[in-house]
Image (cartoon, rainbow, N blue to C red; front, side):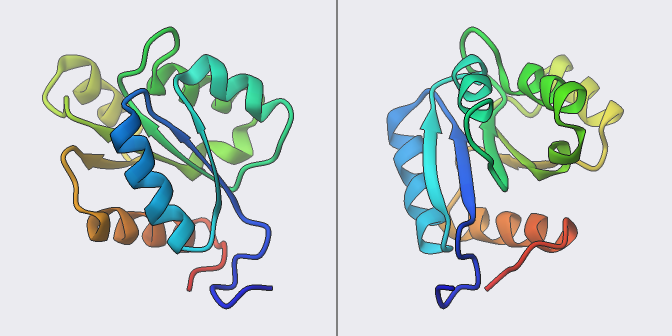
Length: 135
């Protein structure tokens, strides 16, 4: 097991903006995760059918299948994974996001732009909440 206590922990970043995806990948890798990137929920869905992930960091706004649609897919097909999603968005005030947060008040949401330290805190809080190892 590595020093972070996350040996074998895999995270999937669902983000269509390459710069943000790379920042997320760097932060999560430093936290001890093996990180893969999907440009939207459809790609993430295909990846999930082939591998196990312990954490999902998903932009709410992605083409083809957005983060909220991916979340509903998880709740339907892999309900045990739905509480492992951390959402990012630059659109915290839209009606869709407000309605979603009202329906699912326990979801983790980090507004863009965010600092790497803010992401670390949310990831650690999420891992603690779902009883997975944290550094």
